[in-house]
Image 1 (spheres, helix red, strand yellow):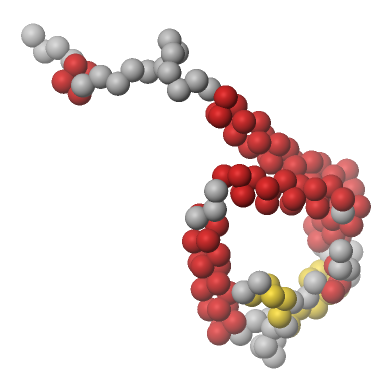
Image 2 (image 1 turned 135 degrees about the horizontal axis):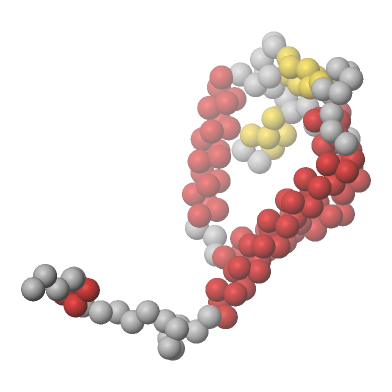
Length: 147
């Protein structure tokens, strides 16, 4: 995992790129006001490229199967677990919070993925028919009797 201080680029079209603007932005630790890193800002053109790339990526993601999405989320969760100390340190420095709070936030992120997995598996195991399923009825039979 790269050092946090080295994450001073923009992710555009699948690549880390240096901002081309002359302007910079300091990422500051709110606890002690120390500068963690300085990021060169992207230009308007780079932002347009990033939005276009994100739109294309969203279309591609929408076309992936549930199994492929599940695999991506599983790998992301594995990465977060494997790099927990570094990620917690980044959260602490970025927010000025405590290690306990940062661990809680990371646990909550992982719990969302686990909850999705649990709900996804339970949906697949439900029967498609049976006594607990709603039966289709013609719309004329669902309207209230006005006599």
